Amino acid sequence: MASSRSADRPLLAARLAAQRLSGTPAVDVVDATRHLLAVQGQDPRAARLALRARMACGHASAVDRALTDERSLIITSVNRGTLHLIAAEDEPLLHALTTPQLLSNSDRRLRQEGVSAAAARRGITAIVKALGDDGPLTRAQLRAALEKAGVPTARQAMVHVLFRATLDGLIIRGPMIGREHAFALVADWLGERPKIDRDRALAELARRYLAGHGPAEDRDLAKWAQLPLRDARAGLKAIASELDYRPDGLVDLPRDEVVPLPPPRLLGPFDPLLLGWRSRGLVLDRAEEVVTTNGIIKAIALIGGRAAGTWTMPGGHVELRLWGQQSRATTDALWCEASAVEAYLAAD
Image 1: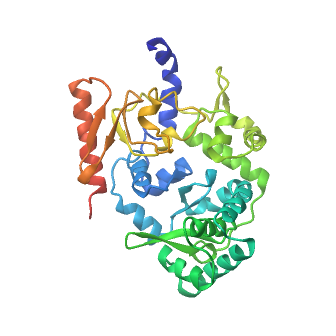
Image 2: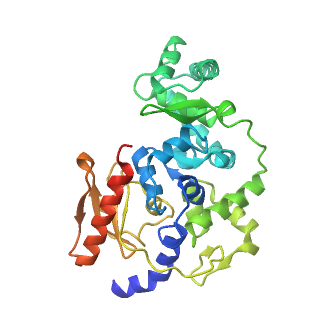
Image 3: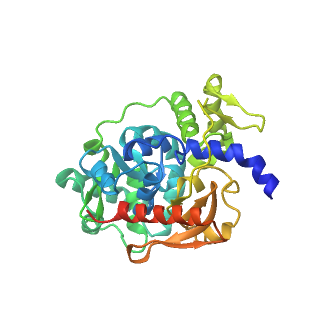
């Protein structure tokens, strides 16, 4: 195991640097988000923690400002149909490439929830009208609009009507209203989408993916974005002249320097480090300790670039659960990280 880890160390160091977990940190929450391209966002606190780990300083409230006041970040369903935090300027690219393949599954789920095609169309029309008349609205307000239109909202029906309106390119999650993330019309919140040339978009996606996830291969990109493998390969082929080709078969953008492994870090649930490639084995040996049977990915303590324990935050205070004995210097560094996490998430 030790020799294998030693052999993996250069690749691990390269990926951690690409992820901005070592080397030069991001300037702010928008810079961190743009660099990663898409940060899984169904857990709002987890998305904010992903950015914290990649910045030198800051506070979680900066994400709310970017979502609400600056309109520089949004949350919407892109890669794999999952909610992601993305830069507003990247929404046209990601929407164009990662949502069309989700339509057939959306149709199936609507039927399963008792929403006919006609009811779905009626519901989307009601959502667009309500948002057009009143501006950004919360889920409860949109539920009332759907029920008034006679559209089912029980169980997961409303979720899938909202999801279909997102896939159709009509709505996103825009500003925070209190503690709730409100929905907004794309046209109102972001303006008119530019026309996307698919070939150029695939090249840009490949380039941006490698910036935050290299070294990687075509199957890693395909899994991360839920693209057909032929599209991932087409994107990488389009930027072939820009790439470094490694002996292990992976490709990467040219890097100026080799960055050492980061100091001990606390990464939140669903961190991009555990979602960016086909395999988590480079970072995670004890997958059963971190990835649950229902798909939850726990917060981890990163030591030597690898998962070495998990952590939780009951009552606003970090509790560590390390899997083995660590040095005093390492545990001190982790408790320093814990204090930084608590301060980052603390109320203004």
